[in-house]
Image 1: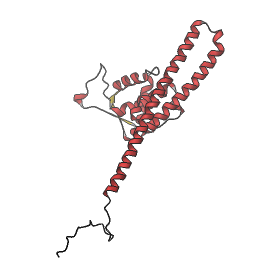
Image 2 (image 1 turned 90 degrees about the horizontal axis):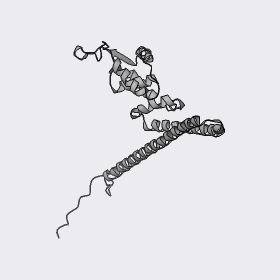
Image 3 (image 1 turned 120 degrees about the vertical axis):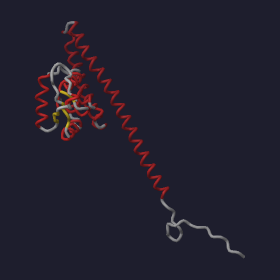
Image 4 (image 1 turned 120 degrees about the horizontal axis):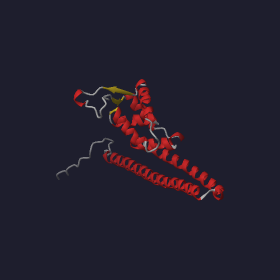
Length: 220
């Protein structure tokens, strides 16, 4: 998950270590507590794998952003771009979980429409399973729960229900977009075929493609 977050952030623009930490904190902090101690081991591994490179900025642009002199700029390599695309095509169960789904969703603008739809549908399926389990457990233990615990259970249930409704809206939007793209592609193919038919020259009776020429009447 952190690898995807780092590569996705650097795909948009090269970043100083401080800027990268700030962006990752805003991105990952929405889904879990982000530990800065996990960032630099990840960066070292990405450097070792050749997925990113580090550069010294030009002297005129090297003014420290804070009191520290952290001037290394991290940049995505060609191999890093390939690895990012590989990660963005993953639409299996691992992409549906709470933490990884949020990261995948944050980079949906770089993800193929078909993959986006599979992830959204998988996430909805996972949450619907969770809803069934919570409702069953709540029905069994309702009588034994105090009022505060019961309200906490209801709050969790309502949160999952809201996310399912949100996913339903996103899935409907993605499907409409796919249908519109399919219609446009069909229209383009039909237009191309029509243009081809119109451009096909007429064949004369003699079997040649030359246009027929009218002949003047003979003088009597």
